[in-house]
Length: 77
Image (cartoon, rainbow, N blue to C red; front, side, top):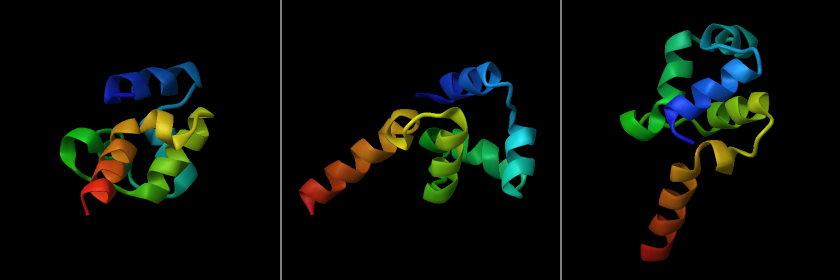
């Protein structure tokens, strides 16, 4: 999913970044950075898991680019 898709899913679930931040005890900026992590390079695997869980989807579906990148790095190492 890209950041726009994640935002749309949050809205469908009745959530927004502020609600996620409150639920997780983190800042809205951190939530934003994780959602936009594909573009910003900011990666927090625990927070990626948290956001995917709140959406009711596997983290590999919400942040597939991260797992593809990780698999490719392992293959070339």
